[in-house]
Image 1 (cartoon, rainbow, N blue to C red):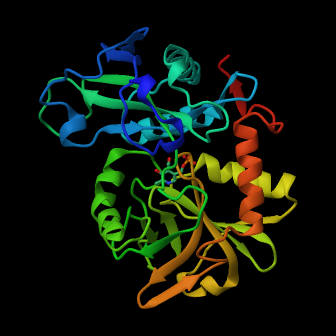
Image 2 (image 1 turned 180 degrees about the horizontal axis):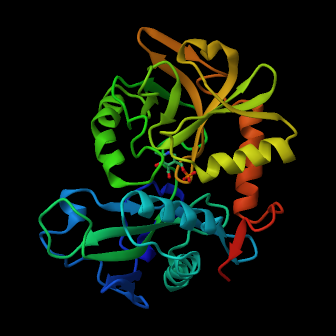
Length: 339
Ligand SMILES: Cc1ncc(COP(=O)(O)O)c(C=O)c1O
């Protein structure tokens, strides 16, 4: 399979790679975990993951550098976020060391699937924990599985670093005090229909507003939102129902410390889009996807351009990717070398 991969036309689709890591939680403890070749799980029909969405997951990437070495970008942050998801859904946690070790093992075992330096692709790692074992009532599972598999990926949105248009959804992604801030499957099952409707209407995905007032931007599909206002301030929404994006917090740092912009986490009102000269979606998969325009009701608001990328978005993208692929010095502890 790896011989047939066209690195330059990779999108974001499942490709079976050779090895995955798996660890079982039984009798109140995790086992040591191991690498296996089988990509199928054999689990009880009563597994809580199947009926009650007792599961959480993560997404991070391994990058091939110019010198042939391999970078993981802030995997400790994914490990910590997964621990928070576990707490919220009453699942046993994986400690940071075991999480990072599993990621490293998967990258090394599937090294030949890492897209070459210069293709802008990466090896996407998908860690997850699911509740399994015989059960029927609504309660936490008796057993759990932690696994990590990987897939070589290119651009998440078809267009890559070209502006994409989005449409405001009439649906809510998550409740105000619900699970929106956790990376748990239920949020994503809920987003399938709104996402599909947006794509049928030729938009990249939908924009979710805050569930309480429907006046403020929360998320862009499965990415966080940011914008640059006319005061050259990098702004991004603050809300208890947004997933705390590792990319977004990295961009807040880069904008402030490297681009010397002002930064602010604040309310971004959907009827005040003309305050912003550039906007984008950010995330591990989306990287930075410039937002051309947003449709809200009968209005279509264009930011910088529907075809050109704004200058600050370009600089943020260059700095972020430069750090991830090892071309630009990373802030302390952001990069873990796999080899
Ligand atoms: C709903 C949602 N928002 C934002 C993000 C971006 O988060 P990160 O930058 O940590 O990948 C993701 C992807 O993980 C997501 O699923």
